[in-house]
Amino acid sequence: MKIAIQVMVTPYTHEDLDTAIHIAEAALKKGHEVTIFLFADSVLAINKNVKPIRTDRNIPQEMKELAEKGVHIEICGICMDYRGITTDMIIEGSRPSGLPELAKLFAEYDRFISLMA
Image (cartoon, rainbow, N blue to C red; front, side, top):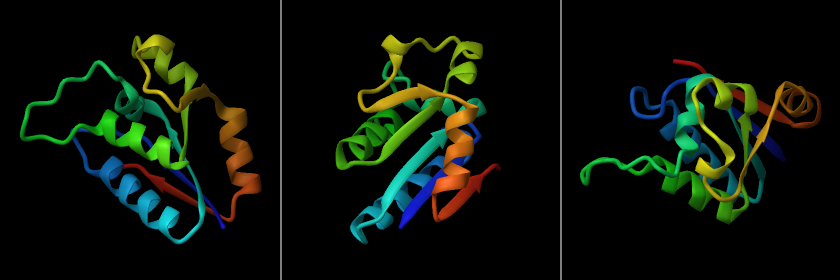
């Protein structure tokens, strides 16, 4: 099964991205193909320059590890530009994309989960 997860809110203010990460990990263990599409403020989750405090989770690192396990990480390019994130700032395994790619997820994937605070 192909599962797409869209996240729209900031990574450290809400737990939507944590939920997406847990769903993606569980789906991978079951053998499913997973894509996470980061839209709006959630694009901040792939900024490898984020330095969380010791007791907090390192979401960019968690996203990188998901990409290494085979999760496709798509990032809204316009959202990146709006927030000042450049391609040299994004984690390995993620790629800027856009609304055409998001529409393709709707059309071609079996399940689409949208997390929006």
